[in-house]
Each structure stands twice: as structure tokens, then as C-alpha cells.
Length: 160
Image (cartoon, rainbow, N blue to C red; front, top):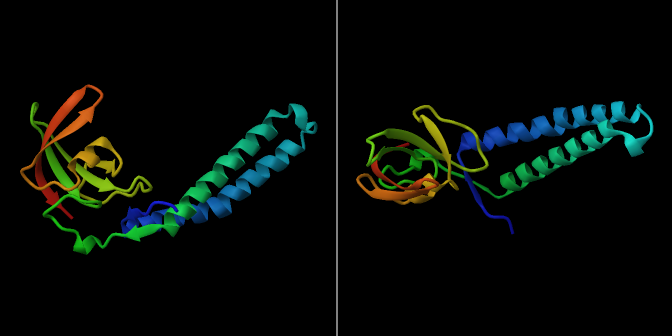
């Protein structure tokens, strides 16, 4: 069984629109590419045909991925988001303890690319930063494992 994906209503709508675009326009473009490649003749040495078939496979894989995400999606009620604890959909201001740099993130589903106003950066719920801060409150200090080592952040603010 596929894992449930948490999405904002905007993220869900975005995926629906992408799916429709891929099903209609994407498939038509691939069909045309294949037809053009077929017109070149011998398929055994037809790199255009091979490329078109690879593009078709990638397109169909993305369509399947979106369909599965939408089928298992749980829509987050953004109005009901708590500002007490960081969760999916939260906008969070964090401060790098060592350097004093301040960052404003919005935690989104790894399936989504939608961005709300009020966040400088998006971070997937599967990213190291999001994994470290989800479940924490304002004032908490969290450790984020990065390639250059552990980075300590203070949770400054949580908003919707």
C-alpha cells in the first residue's frame, strides 16, 4: 500500500493540473515525436525513435506517480494548522545559532512545488531541515545534519 502524502489544497490542485497537462498535451507531444521518428524508417538504428520511447516511458512514470500521490493524498486544513508546533504546511523562521543567519521556510510535501507567500525557501518534508524541525516549538534548538557537519538552529517563529 502506498504511503499517505500530506498536501495543501494548493499542492493538490497543482498536481491535478500537472496530471491533466501530461495526459493531454504531454501524451500528444510524445505521440507526434514517435510518428516523426517512425517516418525515418529502420527502427534498429533509429536514435530518434529510441529517444521518443524513452521520453514516453518517463512521461508515463510521472503520470503514474502523480495518480498514486493523488489517490493517497490527505489534504491539510491550512486554517486548522497550529502555530504551536511545526508540521507540514507550517511556515517557520529559524536562526543559525553559529552565524546568526535567519531563514524562513515553508514545509511542503515532497510531491508538491507550490509556494505560499511569506516563505523565502521551500523545504520538502523529507529534507534534513524539515525532518529535524517538525514537531518542535518556538525557542527549541535543533540539530540538522548537513554535509559540512551539524548545524544548530533556533526556532524563532511558526506561522500558517
